Length: 489
Image 1: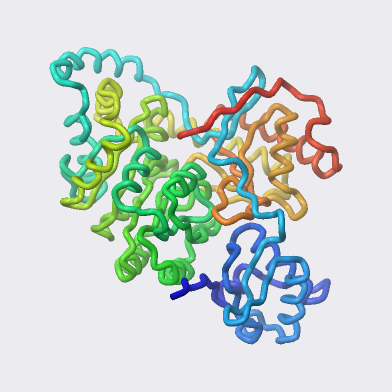
Image 2 (image 1 turned 120 degrees about the horizontal axis):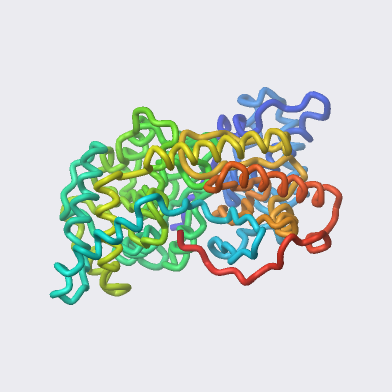
């Protein structure tokens, strides 16, 4: 039995197309809008488009207009007609790029601004937390140190945080891991087999996508718009995929920053249950709420079968290399058995440090929240001043702005030119599951406001290079490049 082909509804296609430019032929405007939607990944490659007849009503155009637009897309390599499958979105030969595996931040030379990593500096008080943890360490030295489940005190603090957020949890539901990606690896070993279908958001965190590819599963993209999830389109994707699992980032999604409302969580939880798809929920950014206000319930409050993955890397400090997995009631044993094939436990001292920090503040301190807000404001204002044709939304939380570049400006070319200006950024294709997103750029804002402003000035100079047709490497380089190493944060 062949797999179902993912499809996009006529009404969603019309929303993606928007208003057709009245200054040129309607078929050409429609073809260009659809081309951009496919190239950007908003309509993933392999998706069946609506029939010519079905699209006429929502768009308010004639069938001849749609037919001619589809013909243009076929000639350009963005559409393929298959008997029995209708018209399927494709990418031209050579354009199926995702960029290098994962994210590769540099070991930057002096004067280089590195915005490839959306993570913050260590908060005040970390040294003191280590000093207190060292005093508590002797109590753990009589054992072997292989705490496969994790330090009990930390597991209880994590469980309490879930309870505070409205999700009943005990320490027996939690294991401590060496970060969120390590936690995903544990989950993958416990519940996935090679060839299983897994739904993953598109765009998504690159290291998550690569961890899933390493598990030899088949990925099915679920498109996330810049403003969040189209619930009807997401339900269609989940139904068509019939997947073993769905990896979602409902809290300040990386890279878009979108926050999934409770009503959407409830609908998707219902659809996941109906399709026997296990929700795997990445909550590593949940504490980065920069505006405050009522927070949605954890996704697992809507889906008791959900497996939740958390991390201290964004809320506290990546140097702790500590995360966790919350399993459904009674589901911890399989995770522990899968975990020991990769490692026997996270470092005890760092777990004691994190327990100390979380007891004092489960997420961002007010000082760090104010600092991140100021940096985000500086980034947004600098973009408006120096790159006014770049479009973006300012989300309620998260550590980045997901920026749409104007037509004709490639983020791949822009990131290469930016390196010549002493700025390191991650191009859109690195966040793509099935190719595309080359008109998108993720800009984190973890650095000081004045540094964020300078970063945009350098980005604007790089954009001038690209628009002028000057190849990267020909401009003055602020500092020499150095070898890059993978990011796991």
